[in-house]
Image (cartoon, rainbow, N blue to C red; front, side, top):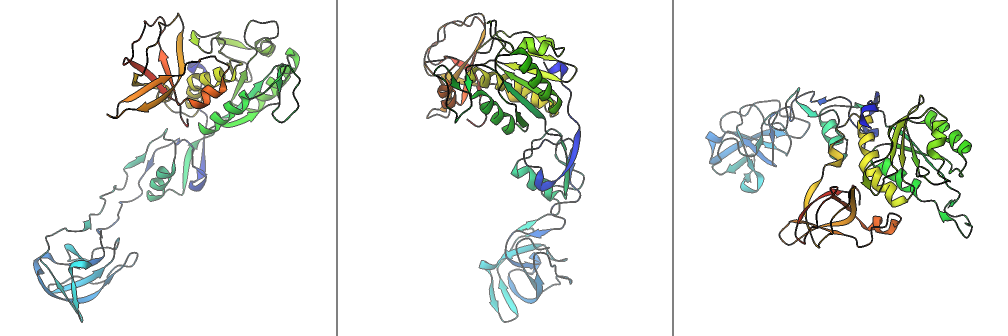
Length: 388
């Protein structure tokens, strides 16, 4: 799949609008931070060689407004947190340790460099603070602002069109026929797309008609960087999605996958753009979105796609039977025991249609194809589900 994906172009956006966006270029610091030696505490800037003793107070250095003179022998300057340390002073004594007597202060013995933040102690000019590919959260925005960046270059957010089809589907809030169910897959996939930095475009749910599906798909391809088709890709008489896309010149790169749930997942390209087919069962669609849609989106965003599907190890809280010929992803709860070791418990019912089970899960246990029986306490690979 990833062989067909190319990163999207970059655009410049104001820093306040960059939350959740992915950097297209590194952000270097425009100057040292702090740009001067500054006080870490409220107190008095003095020469350590003059302490202990009574020192004459000659001025103040406040945050944003420094002291113009110099700290000469026998003098002290009132200083606030974040203010520049005056020339000549080499230490700051905190105000709780000082007794004031008129225009003099009585200070104890203080060692050099106490309570002083050196120039550039956070970062220095030219240092790369945020690297290309970083998703900008609140902390990253703060660091970018500290670097002096008013605008940042980010990858254009991918527009992902979502098309679901099926005569059995009814919109939420409608009055479904006795043999219909409420359509839910597009809502879940759209939510995941948005949380992963994309812009979901939900198309109208089409009936089981190849012509109608082809027309909706063509519209989706025009409006998006990737079309996601949910359902209609199995081998039944009413699975029209893939044949409909064939009318638009679809060339398949992946016809199906050896993964459970999600065998009908497919991927290909038309002249208008890329298409990812997900299973019709909502829980299967959500699982395969985490396994395949998210890496494709990361590739569109210029990020390393392997990061989002990196597994971790957890201790199994119950035995599991041997696995079959397909790699199996079990919906599970990931927790920690009293010793801080991560533990995993698979839900008993793994039916691919159960959305309630998926909603209760926060991870997927990965079982390789033909894995043997696993006893309680065995170490297994788990994929955390972001946001769960």
